Image 1 (cartoon, one colour):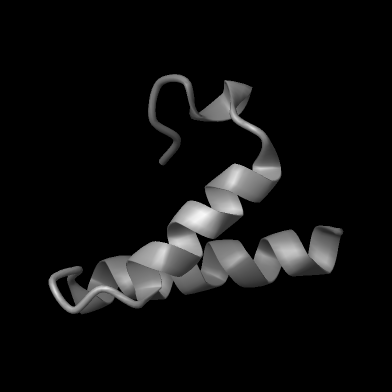
Image 2 (cartoon, rainbow, N blue to C red):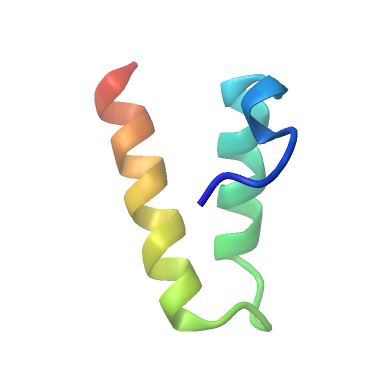
Length: 46
């Protein structure tokens, strides 16, 4: 789900944020799965 203002951010910043969150131990695994899918989809599109 896109948060407010996320659409206006540069895609690279969104990708960097998700990669950062994947490395955090306090992020739930289900969220990491979603972030991983988002990262892979971004890479495939670009």
